[in-house]
Amino acid sequence: MILANLFAVAIGYRAIQNPGKGPSLPVGMPPVLKKFGIPELLGTLSFGHLLGTGLILGLSNAGVL
Image 1 (cartoon, rainbow, N blue to C red):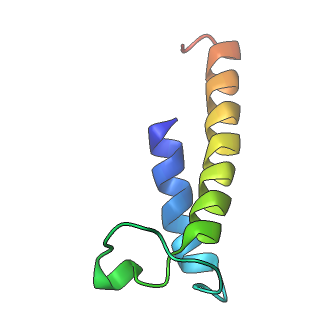
Image 2 (cartoon, rainbow, N blue to C red; image 1 turned 180 degrees about the vertical axis):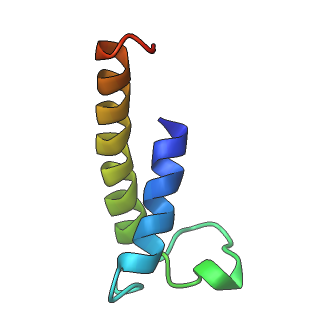
Image 3 (cartoon, rainbow, N blue to C red; image 1 turned 90 degrees about the horizontal axis):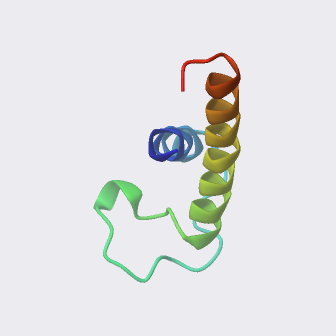
């Protein structure tokens, strides 16, 4: 699940067309992620949870987990 969330954040950072329109995160961010705010974080982590759930369910049905 953690890897799926990190993958989703990496995809979302490149794919979001208008970043920084909402409130920013309350913690210090590196200059590269300056425009990555709360809406971007919530959106990418929601997508990451969907990916992670699909991966976990798919791998468990295949007998890998």
